Image (cartoon, rainbow, N blue to C red):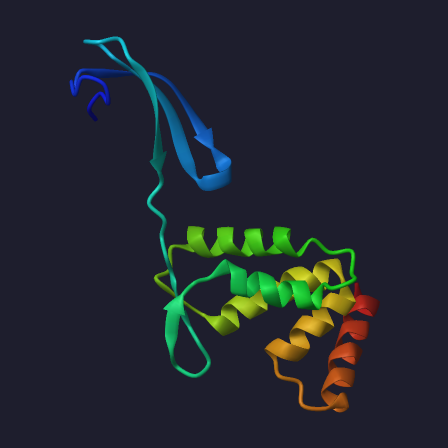
Length: 151
């Protein structure tokens, strides 16, 4: 680190604080030669897992795609889709797996939706599991009813 005013590398850190919005650390620094104070941000190097798609292709995990699917499923429902997407992203990044299947991500979303809102869950499941007809819907709903009766 060099002072932006005089170029000296004799710098001390005065204060450090995490910035949760963008996963960085804010540091106030002071040059010991010219006494200039300045702020730096250290960005935490992000881990980018690769998603294995159903068709065999691969792409980097993109929370916005998950969020879009959750928004559709949770439309007009009392569910915070963004909170669910953040939780799933947190779990994926902390799992430190280099690759994760889109099926696993979908199952994580369905598990969270099932606990919060049955309608949002069925909507999401219908797309994720590619329900082909009304019978598939009915089987899923019957399965949910049985689970609720048993709990």
